[in-house]
Length: 166
Image: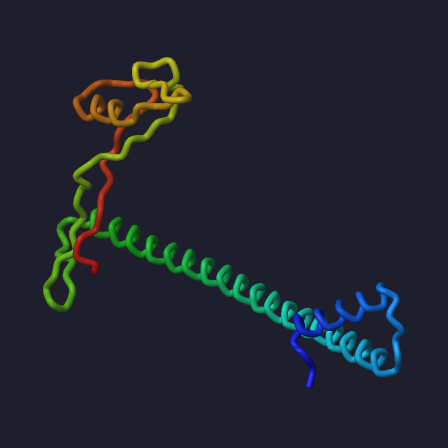
């Protein structure tokens, strides 16, 4: 039976020290040296094989992770398209009562909070603030736009959401 890697390396090291110290090596010590060397070589080979297997498993797991991310993104896009299409149909046909088999209505409602859309140069405006760098004070800008201020580089839009589809 082969020795463990540490034991084989320790034995081999002791034999090498004996050779370095000039101790006469007889046939028995030569045989022990060969066995210890074979044990170390075997242990190194086993480690190389094991690491190759582990690296293979890591690559396989990474590829499965990447495939899962792609699948998730695909299904999220499909879900979002179905919701957007349904919202469009419901909002374009307000006189039709869209209901499921249990009578639950589909309705399109405005979101309670608007979305801030910045589409121009804001540096140097009253909404620029300095932290470590110049940043847009989105909170103040959004509050002012909701209050009715006009800003040439930004606007707010009220989005919609679909209720009753879940």
